[in-house]
Image (cartoon, rainbow, N blue to C red; front, side, top):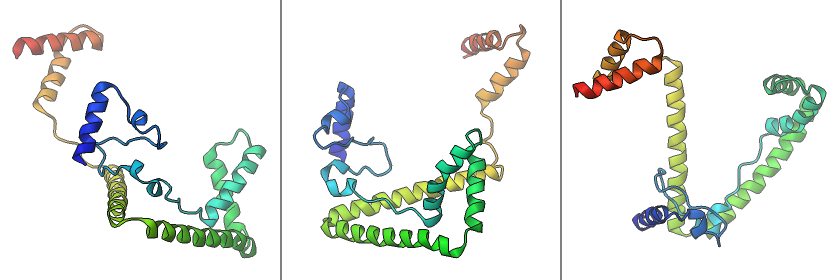
Length: 193
């Protein structure tokens, strides 16, 4: 891994992108500063990992959204989605079953594809794949936690001495425009320090 990071640094210093290095394999090198650096271009199986199938509601809403947009071209997407959700709730179970059956069939095909891919992976590729999945989960949890703290009114960091100095001098500065005040404060700061 260190070799790849070093190679990335040399290439970026020379102005060569990861895309030109990996032009033959058709994928791009990821930034070495990501949480887990897994070179996907070593194996085509990792890059062809399938996506999870759409749920029955998502499948229904994707099918209905163009219809609702055609009927109401000026409506916002949030309004259209509310109407689609209301329609889904009122939909009889017999019609919902069609979407649920399609989801179950897609889910079975997805599980078979996952099993086929995992049988082909080497133990080192399995470990790297598990690490990548774990890093994605941790990143998602961190984002959710940050969002919750923001919603709860997380306290801000305490002000630094520099911030206090600038705000006091900004209040004391004469002249009207903020640009002139900022230039005056910067000049005063360099004179004092």
